[in-house]
Image 1 (cartoon, rainbow, N blue to C red):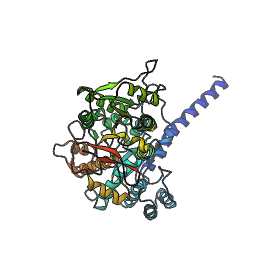
Image 2 (image 1 turned 45 degrees about the horizontal axis):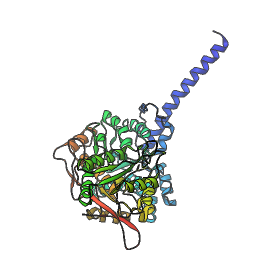
Image 3 (image 1 turned 180 degrees about the horizontal axis):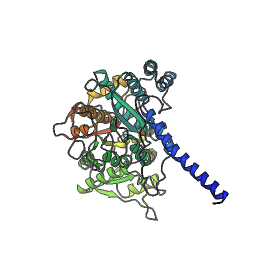
Image 4 (image 1 turned 90 degrees about the vertical axis):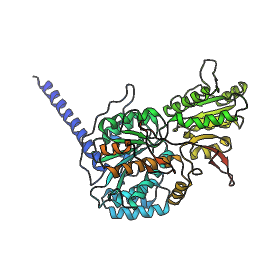
Length: 482
């Protein structure tokens, strides 16, 4: 063998050793930070990204995980919060408790800090029960915080009342950005942590469906607090949803439309073809409407492209509204991506009150009220929960957070309460799954109704219709309607 070839072989061997060593270091680095001071390093699973999909950078995963040692919501902060996180990272949990308590006095509406506070208080417990919640902090902060408030409230209540059979509940927060590639990678990581008993997540159906098969394969319970897509729970018997199916959610909305339409309802449907969650809901809405004699207005440009597809370059709000009027439309359905609500607001402004507005629960957000203002007044949509319909939880949430919460907080609370109740029966992954599927399983949630799951893993729940109404202060809010 020549000296050159020998040198090349040596360089190749060294490169391979460095690569293998880097992977090992990554695994060893991630897990202690998932549960600092209380976990051992574990091997990381290797996911297989979808064909044509750019795999996420594995090195970014640790920055998306925090038990209290890392700030995930950078825009909601205080000096005390930063000090608490530094103390937590240094495993000085008593100091962390002091700082987090001080931060919450300044910012009581911060669910990240409340979760970190409860985790720090558990530092003396050797075996707290551990769950994780995965939310889209980087993609949709408002939605992420709404979900975190429900998880945090359930954790705070159970830990203040003696825990689960005497042991506290520890919650790891994960930022998944509603990105299927990230949720898939993260699921492969999380299932290897045998002390983790459940996942409360994910937010959208595509993010959930990407991760669900991995949780199912490894026997880790996943309870989505916000996904209306029935296909998510169909993945397997370890997958649950804390909300009803899209088909059951649209029925009261369609019945409302049909009962009040002066002639056969003819609805313009504006949607985002790139948003699987709302496409499922849109399809369920169209099926229910046309099945009851309603019609869908077809608005196309000269190239045959849909003028009201938010995910297409052909989208033209003003032209869509003009054509809808020409076709004698009686209503307008808005179905944007939860990650991109601006096109729906644009259409509402172009509509200027001409057509009644309808939507899916995705538009039940503070952004719609703040940015839409008068343009969205009168908007009607179905929701799993409303503070008007269920005042008991609304009052307790108002007292804790100092603000009104919405349905995502309520269903995230329910998902966490379901996990808590199941762990009281048996605190193992398989035991939790059996408990949630048991015919006699029921526990109290945010609604007056009990939390129960069907054999399919779906939630049985009666939706509430809400409408955007102007209130005395001149601002807008969602109010329950008959």
